[in-house]
Length: 579
Image 1 (cartoon, rainbow, N blue to C red):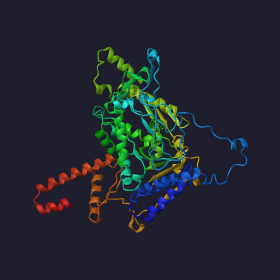
Image 2 (cartoon, rainbow, N blue to C red):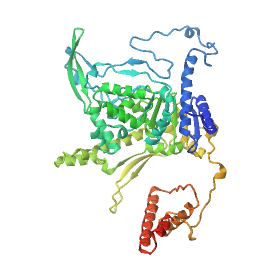
Image 3 (cartoon, helix red, strand yellow):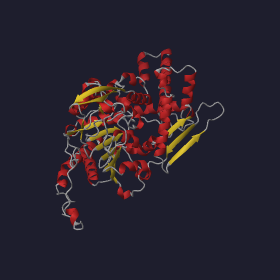
Image 4 (tube, rainbow, N blue to C red):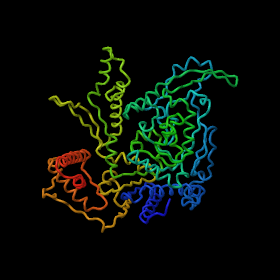
């Protein structure tokens, strides 16, 4: 949106070149706070995407390097002369190229299943339901990037008679991921400032806790309880048969209604997707607002837009966790993955695959049986979905088993027995992932390029050993911006003692002493009198920050009490307080 600074031009040029050097390119870009990193990522990566799409027809028409050499002399005559058979009726050949904004749509099967003619009416009750993974419709195994409509089957409105339109998948995509929803919202705000917001389709994915608009579910509070209740409502579907007639045939059709009112009308989901597309780039709060306006679930509405999106903005867990990628239908093949705040990527990856089951959870069903047999089966809704409920307990067990499926040489199981002596800690069994190499390779092996960006990524060698030890340092492209603060403006000083001569000791055993906190306060009071534009202070933890702050507030109150008891004037009191 404006002329870039030289440091931004260097950053964008390096990132664009890294993407052009793919496939399986890996680049680390270090850009300190205040250098416009987010905007530089947007402009360089999305411009590369548009250029790559524009060049696709040239490559397909034979003007690319692969086709320049003509036919392969080693290829036999029968293969050169072979003419592919036309596709079978009803099978549509995929387009080899993808324009910037995919407009075409194709018809897929409707939400209702035909039950055949009347003579087979007695057989359908013996048919098995199709297997659904994780208790959620739309998550059964499927081809990469292809995912059925999410969120609970057919609707109960007249839209059931309409076929669902599913747009072709836009490829390659750009996936941008960061740690928190606030960082993702900042990315979308920066994107709105550019022309790319109107040229590319963008979808922002979030958690159910952030996007759920069903107040009965939202009031449950914790993310686990919201997730469980959402899946429960989708299971609680009501089915009924309606008679249909046509072409001199009679039959029955199943009419399915989801338990969640925000998913019953599929036409509203279509309206949601249409409104989101019209607005351009939207963050999570915008999606939730449109969902409330339309009256349909923004969580599943956003998920249904992934396939046709050019840019997908999503949190770490949704991209880096394999089960989440499969559930969302994310296709990383030949796409660009940009990981922001990548300095803690290795720790985030290992923690995602950790899981724990406590003894009070391995006994959840026994407790449920006990309450039922003793007449306490009618638990209220809050008790049924509490953190210690059988549902949450089973989810913990399922997570543990899922972790074992990803187990490799770097996985370990820890068993902790109950400690005697009145300790309240539960015994537990825990799976821990010690290294993130294998899980991260699932991303790097599929993607066209992986870009890791952050304020500081040093030491690079440690990052390499933890995430991709198989690569040589020369295989990793690394760029580091010079800081915008000139060297002459930086003066590091180590202060060993306070104004009264007391030696500073902020080790864990001494930092909480009242005398040490008072001495630190005296030192800061002296500093603020000579530093003209204010100071920033960093603490080792939030707990210690609160402890120091509370101590200073107490000292200030005591000093104010002392002044009011003395004979000093109001003007003298004001001078003392300012000091």
